[in-house]
Image (cartoon, rainbow, N blue to C red; front, side, top):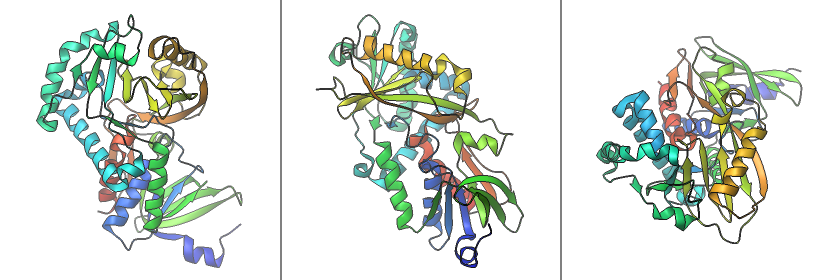
Length: 378
């Protein structure tokens, strides 16, 4: 089925096409519109809702726990690690400025890292990491507080101590994304969901994008001056030459409790496990390090081995003796590489990509969108 005369007139030609309706795609489109208010912008999302992790994550407004940053320093060096922290922080502030704390459901209840016997070796690293971060934040970010183990009700024989970070926050990612879509709509950015991009080509004078329309079972070709890909882990199908590895993350929330014994965002085991209060529930996720091979996938689903371990952590370590039941569980798809630095670059004169957010999309996604918009507009 071909496009009608009216469709060709109104829907085929654009100034910019953005592929991906998650936090990076929306941020890119909004930043483009801020730079060029008169531009016609089309955003294409293959799912009815964002397909990756933007509405499926744990809602952490964080820039890295102590153990994560110590490991990052080994790979990136101190300056590289600090630069990444600065970008994450800048992204969070830009997100808060754009959406507003009320729209994000943002709460700065602090962040904490549970230290087991295996992580005790990281405690001597606190002064050095604090010195590095103090050059930017102006305070000592990490402080050990062993009294929090009892205060929060964790299992004393497993959790040896807790590292506190007052700068960390939490937010409601559903509200975040809904508000970003509303901002895009107010700026007259046209969004098409349920529209999967199959092919793209840079023809120098313009780009052409072929997208599948399930309603008519046909491909539709869109044209634009510039094209930006913001598909994170799913970018590997379009750009197999880049170091992009998907990582599936499992998350669940418990049934409501009379009182959650803690507030804030919590990290365990170099950030591979994470939990927080979510209203009157506990939200817990992670564990892909238990089965990297199976979790390196773009397929949604539940790994029963990981689910069993998350349940054990909840029952034995986080809320011992509570007998909490799981109310909902789901998975999201993130993107990783040899380093945690995102890929933001031009792949041709008219095509750019902003992908591989390293599990830090909430923190760095808005900044990546801003950087990508600057590249796409140049």
